[in-house]
Length: 146
Image (tube, rainbow, N blue to C red; front, side):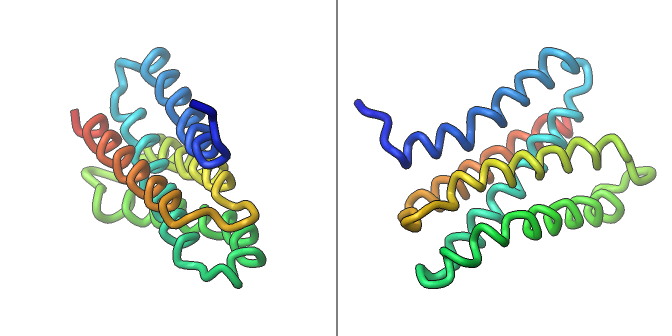
């Protein structure tokens, strides 16, 4: 089976995040919450960016998609800061958790660049990216709380 453009894009989006996750396990395995926050930051951000990109019409995609990745990534990092300071605050704001989830968000922004190409990818690719992001978010939640 040949590796088509869409399959290559899917692999290019998933493999770097998986490689970084493996490094977290190998180097910081005793701190599962670090991997959890990284994976959750990646997953939530990748899903959010994929949903945003999918919502753009074909006419707006060419001009708006490439310029929206960085602001979208920054918004995801800001959302991570807010959730770390409010919803997930057990004792205090944890700078290390915030750093790990922000690294995940940056990796998601890089991965989302695989979705920004001409012609606009099929909706199926955005759906797969969203599902991948939700899966990473779930994996991140599991590691963060175990």
